Image 1 (cartoon, rainbow, N blue to C red):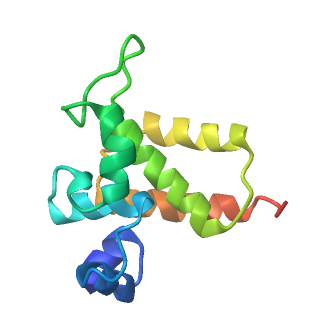
Image 2 (spheres, rainbow, N blue to C red):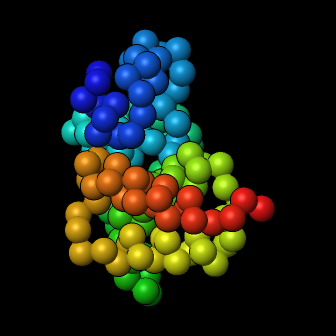
Length: 134
């Protein structure tokens, strides 16, 4: 549990709660937890993902959108990572700043897996510390 907790940026106690079914895996952590566990569909471990994200992905979780060519699976993961970092920061983040964060993470040439998602969240947390509380 400690290794999974470290990989997804939470405490071992949080993972324990999820494992025992006491608390559901939160939407903002579902993609990272699923990737860390080798589960291809985050909806298998998160009801919110299945109900709110999966319908937009269609049958293939990494389908390409049209006509702009965004990888919806990657975009969904990026959104979850950025939303998690913002939520953890407890800061009021302006929409344009959030959009720039999403754009930069999405355009990154690095694969976004559980380990890189945790690194991105850590980097975003540092960046968010520079924002003045609103």
